[in-house]
Image (cartoon, rainbow, N blue to C red; front, side, top):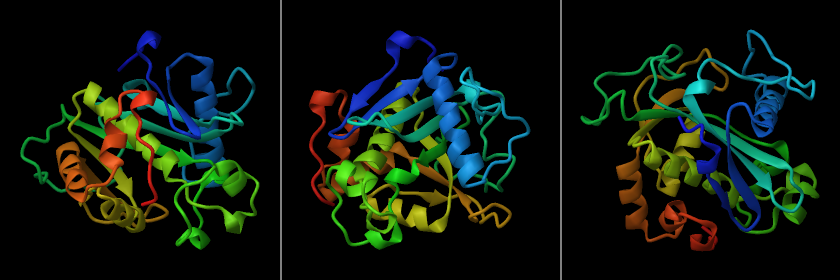
Length: 255
């Protein structure tokens, strides 16, 4: 796990800034507060055994996997609003978050996938102001989220792929740094189908767990298969994911 703040990654897109947050910093407390607001208070998907208070006196959501993870936040650049969060649980003696909660078929579909090179995408959340709604299905992908999302009625919010793809880029680059070739993630069928449509192959490796809401199962994502799939599509997504700094970032055309 990277605890050296001089090596913390920071990337930007047109409308968002993505920053790694490090344990023990004020930014990390804000990140845990964001997780509590989304997962515990709004969605009620997590009932933590205890909720520590931040130095600001607000509840935080944290667990035993956080010390073994790397964490990211996305911020809307013009307003500073916290837009999204995500973490990658790295290989560690505690294991992955999905292991005790889901059935995982063995052997895994990739022969070289081992505990040493598998991480887990976890605690990915998007603030309500920036979420896509069902009414947005056929609307444009690109645009400034300020007029399109924040100041629009909920039913009129548009999809903003820059935010979601920016999170995936952070995860992709982080996994390269940590030599993680595969990631597990618990997802519902709808989200996994969306990722497959965009060119992110998600292979189911277990049955659906009906005891979680919404029902989800564990998928395995291969970095190599993702790169091959995106390169065959001839889109700009792979170039966007592989950009190493802000100046390298190609603009995203409508998908």
